[in-house]
Length: 441
Image 1 (cartoon, rainbow, N blue to C red):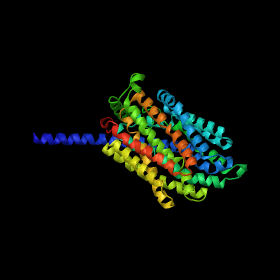
Image 2 (cartoon, rainbow, N blue to C red):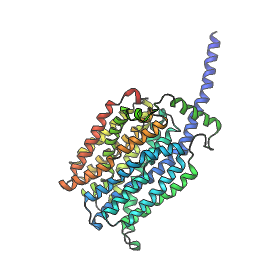
Image 3 (cartoon, rainbow, N blue to C red):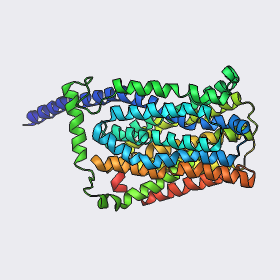
Image 4 (cartoon, rainbow, N blue to C red):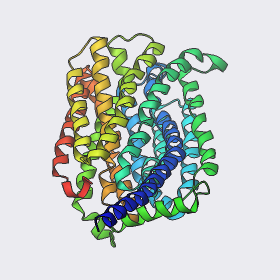
């Protein structure tokens, strides 16, 4: 009898090992196939969204604009983003990611290049608004697309790798932007900032076309997976779908208090993130970093630090399932760093604080998306992700606009830094009200 028990146990272990091995190999395969390419696409999106921060160093003097004009133009992008994001995500969920994501990338690349001919604040505002309309749905669409392939238990690491595109965009884009603005100044009669918009739109255009040939709308459509791998992936997704909330009416969806709490939290994260992103070159310029080219090199340093931190935070979150902690702690680090930065003049200490702030804000962003996707499923996930993202991204309008206005009114950048610090602190505190049992799994 004893011998039989041992044999059965050994047999069960022998049976389980290959199954576990198949699952690990399959998810590694999906990770290699999808995540680097999606990162590259988001890198292009983020580059076209924030290169205006470097263009500002020349645009404002060339066109005789104030910080208020720049701040409003940087922020009006998010009005277009807000208006079209939910419809965009619903279309993607209904008709498929491949063609819709390609459409998004191709149209925003064309609009981004058009900034090279802007000559008035009105034209600047209109193009920034249209860029927001064109890009609406890309980030939440990719987040939704990831939920089609990866269950909640594996998603924090995937999100962390995907959001590595944000620091990568700055690591690559900051030195590249500085170099373009210096090297191409005067070529064909165009200023450096005009070439910046034209040349940095090309990657998004190429990647938009590549999406049509590379991505698959679903697990079933993926020819690069074996039938056994498809069955495993589909089984895991369907099992988790049965445990998630699927609202069956508009009223039930909008009355879910968790949705609005998460929206408020993400609003605070976005306030902090864009307070750094849109003003980092100006902060370095104001503390005496030197030429545009040198500012570009120095601006990459905080994002190198963020890039290193992201995968560690993501793996720790998946291992411990402490989702709220891994979102809130980085936000607190960023809040403290930005507050201290308001009283800092030295370039060395400023770079240390900017590194902590960038890493904290970006890690907080990546880990936030493990929260709503843990309990929303199906069309509720499509609408929920888009609703949270589009409303919260209105902070992208208020953050640069208010910072620009505060800088002009006070004559100092410290007031704007305190504003973004306070927003991150409030968001971290709000995480305490998110039900632990709903998200820490």
